[in-house]
Length: 76
Image 1 (tube, one colour):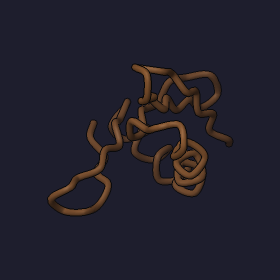
Image 2 (tube, one colour):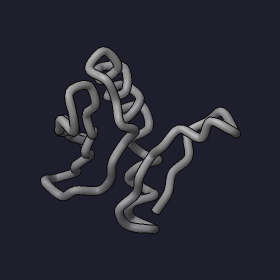
Image 3 (tube, helix red, strand yellow):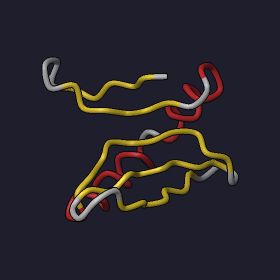
Image 4 (tube, helix red, strand yellow):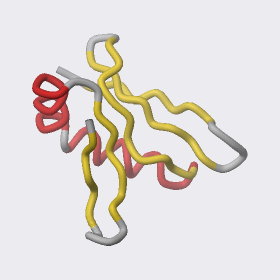
């Protein structure tokens, strides 16, 4: 199964990365500047199994950077 990432502008510099599987919206990845989009799409593809598992168990999710913990967190 392959994830599809739709890039949606949300301002002059920022974009939302919306993740779909088989045409179904399953989650959103970190808000990103244009220069970071390709790298973050690679991160999404590398985490495909994990993201699909989270969606199956908890539904739509949001991946964000947790600055205090210095790691990504997944929220449902």
